[in-house]
Length: 248
Image 1 (cartoon, rainbow, N blue to C red):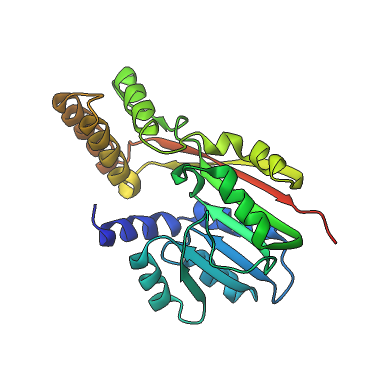
Image 2 (cartoon, one colour):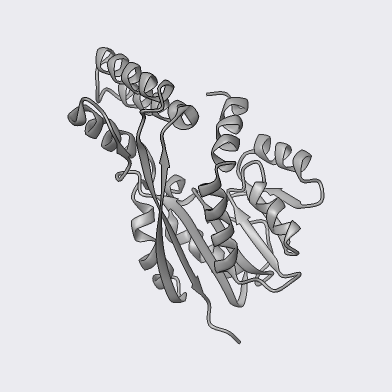
């Protein structure tokens, strides 16, 4: 998938009311004062950074992709975007009051190091919010549940840390955060919006040798037809964990 196609898919998902509500909930959990610094790690095309800026925060977006950062800067010229790694953040110690990472930790090889960086850049009393799905818990309706189960689990195993979301609470506790809480919000998709995601899942699993080309074709055909007729069912339980550092 090209960067343009990826951004279009992300934009379509971000525009959904349920997804917008989830972003708003993450801002509430950050509990920022007006003018406070907040870091959005893995900011992508910058929507959350733009929204936080509009809410009065001093928002900074960091992403590993130079292409994504270029798009973000074009879309939100009033905000601060930087190319950087979640495990080596381009910020000084104790410079922000909030840390947000949405759909990021499953892509990281070392979640513990990333949270150590979060703690480093947060000021005393700062808060962190982690958002993402557990890639082993995608719920997909299909005429072939056994093949679907194989695709879901095989695709999860291709990621650096596919089950990071179920570990959010313990990761935050181990990093020294207090009053850690976890919420679950389930996003449901029934049309073509997320059909490209399922197509990519099947292609990745076939390329890894977990299913045959014939199985891929049959499954993609079924899911595509379901999406076209608004009979697709994809449910993503999204885990939202939050916690704060001790004050001064």
